[in-house]
Length: 442
Image (cartoon, rainbow, N blue to C red; front, side):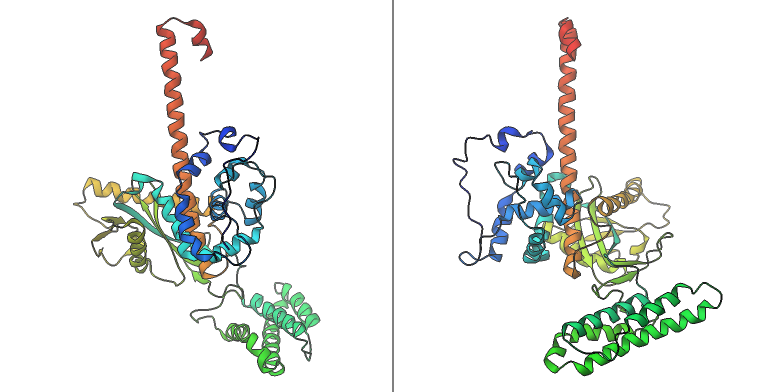
């Protein structure tokens, strides 16, 4: 059910945030520049007008999602800090200070599921709009990176042991009596595996590896035999996944690297310090002159970089309502030179290259630190959100947060420029008018 509207006409005898807070604070300015009605109108369709418990205000939930990425916080941390920070509360639409948390952290999970990828893309679109003319550049830089998922480094042995544990849990939950639980057997085999570097330990460890795989397959088959039809239908997806893991070979495609995130792919990006990355591919488009992120898209397949451009351009046209003129790319995008009316530029030996084009190719490298900041400052270094939808949502929120931070930093610079000029103005006239007291003051 939609949240009830608050009556702010007569709040109380206490002063409001408008009277208490610094009006030059970037979060205060951002709160007044965002068009919150856009989110209210777009997201109210996800709520019932009459049934159910009244929900939290839409502005509050959207503000928490933005603050989470903007300050690089977890769901739990942003909810706790909201109760301690007056600027966070004003950004969320409050008029008076509240010492209580705004919601339970899991409500953010449900809100992300509710609005989905399309709803988060609307937040990203608003982050582009608020940057104004800076986002209107028709010359873009493009690049891709890997957003790593929150999984352990995958090995066959780890997957087999997880299958054993999950089969034991299913048997315990459904009261299935296994012929043998293998708990102590697996423990002994794990100890044998630890000493594979010792003399004569390699052969024993290899036999232990095979035995663990055998035990995992044995437990999966035993559950399929002993579970009745109705119960087996509940676990058919999990058991099919287990069998696929047990059957996959080193040279197979579409391998499973994680049981709780089976959509994860393996990417080789040519990095010396990290040969493989496990997650999803992210494509970004950034304006060349100003650095505003105008495209952020997730891909779950191991596509060549050039194959990601049509979808990235489609998103750009959907958000901006126009086509870009030029996109400057690295050599990984070798292939087509034009998509619709957009010209694609990749570096190549050219004696007749113009100075402007050379400058734009050099400028393309500025997208690399943008990706670095997205990863390390805006929660893209490791994605904790579940599933393919979680991958897309995290990328869009990270890009939106960086756009918001960019305009907030710009407001800070403008404020500093104004105050410094005002200071120099008073110092100049204090010298001109021979007012020593005023000069000493500044």
